[in-house]
Length: 288
Image 1 (cartoon, rainbow, N blue to C red):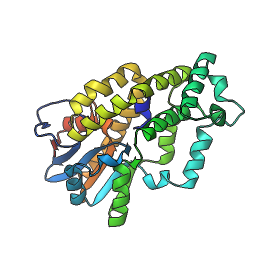
Image 2: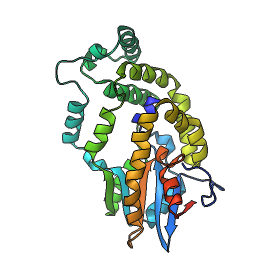
Image 3: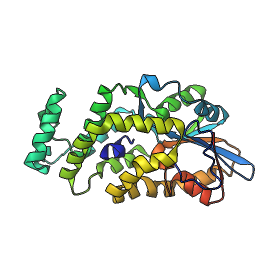
Image 4: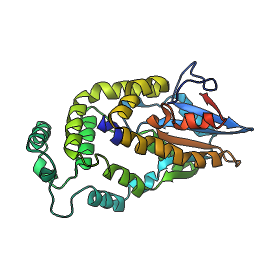
């Protein structure tokens, strides 16, 4: 489950939302003659995932402005990379070995050795950074080497000179990652080691549901397990952020600019998802 926090990278069926003829995780949000688009993203893809479903191109072509979870350009700066390493590595002499049980450390060391990685080179990683490393290593071995939906459209928007905005700063997102695991970091690593074994099946299912836009099934198969196993993290990482984004999305409906909002697909699944919150506020939510 924890890898889903890092990959970090739908909505329940009700009367207004149409799930017939599902084609992609893209929706048009309308009210009083104003419309914006919201699309679900995966943050890393394989070359075989391109071209993206046509609904993304439709929303992009109709949009004047793209809005992302964070400043993608800022994530790619050398300064942010330095900030990330400082925030996600121990700076006080503590080592990863000091925070894990002996048995968990042995399991982690053996797992990394099988992938030709030396745990000694990661001695000062926090468990949060180690969990990211485990997931990214597996994804790379599976062929996930391409930019995700959000990064793809960020650079395209830059080339096309479209307006760009975001909900959160890179530093805010870094703090979300740094806080993963809470006080039980040993359990966090054990969960991560178990989850990477299931990653091929999990990511295949996730991609299938993302491409089809089946948010009901995504919630039942993956997001609900995330909620049940990690309720506090689910609340802070998904629900609380959805609620903070809602006023900003509503403000987009009050001007003449057409926005295309791109957020992680799990933000669109289940009760209190972005789509659910908008529907409850009286907006028409139509899947493209």
